[in-house]
Image (cartoon, rainbow, N blue to C red; front, side, top):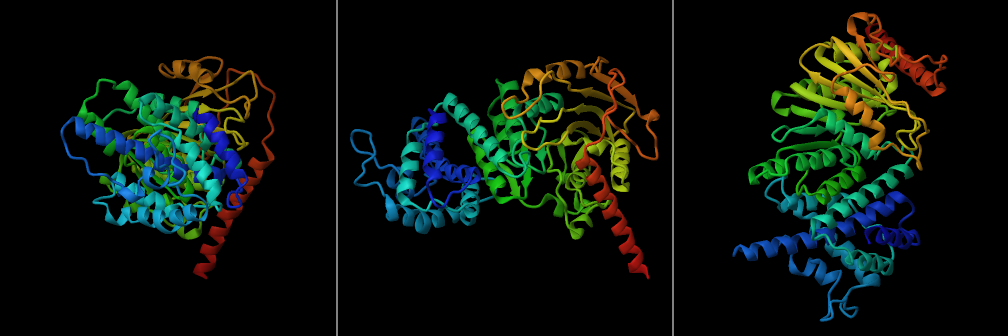
Length: 485
């Protein structure tokens, strides 16, 4: 039912003048969907309070509840079209009354770690783009048919919402910007193995896929948890930061739909934080992330870091190393060129990682893992506190090409998970001793000694990016020299 409803809503929004892309479809579906979910959540809470003979205070005032403006019902349980707003009346109510009312939740909330505050944040960032009140009425009618009362319904809803996020990512210029394949995330979470009581952090949260999957993993692994553990999971486990407004909102709603009422996700540019300002209280036990690759940061942002570079992913790596608690564990997706780039910043960063952390595992992924992104990536698994002595590599070699219609699945990664436990050697896995790594380059390239392959020429884009990095480095040096003259 959910899947067909989403398709119908996309068809409605496609003909609306205010919505022009999959990004708009997801954004506009999201705020309506969220209000319906919130209404069902309130019903559940009200019922529980009544059964416990307790008083329940509604979050939403009577005139702004779903049943008042979106779906007033007659005795037959169907929408009363005489009372339900539509056309200009509906659009004016949403734009001039509903959104301003919900925005105020942010200033009226007792603290930032409440559902009220998150409601205010969501509606401070979003705006209604549906220009036709008649199209909006059709969307509302479709969403009113959905139910979020049972665990199965909520699970199906969150799963399909993930599919919409995936489509949104594929519609953007960079398919990897919003969406990391869930089979890959689940595998990373499995290897890092977070525990209840640890804090889990993603400084490039996007749609919060890592945090959602970690939440599901901990729930499944701790089925007999008590109220205390539930509270820890809800309020003191998951932390994230996200720079882009839409991704930030999608991430918050994704976590709420998965069952985390007040996600600790902050709307900020993580890289604007100076490394020297990070204190012990700011650190986390587990880091799970796929920082954006290919981006460039301004010179003033680069000044926050010991190793100056414009490459966004390299700055994020420095941030992750710094903010990871001693003894903490990390699983980070990054471009495979991180292992071999010869510019000074890349060499210095590899040296920093090897000396301050135990880089115990590198998962080398095939091209096409990130649909539409067209880049090769690796996953770095490391623990902070002891220097690296040896690195175990696993090269994922599949007998098919990955793409939109042939995506990565968990069974593809089963052999990696099995062998990683013992760091065994195989046709696809091997161990590199750090003593054998040249100290002038700290080159960690994934060169499988167990496979005889023809020499592979580097991708043109890879060469261009390294040339750009070297040019940028030369420019920084030149500017420094000129500044001294």
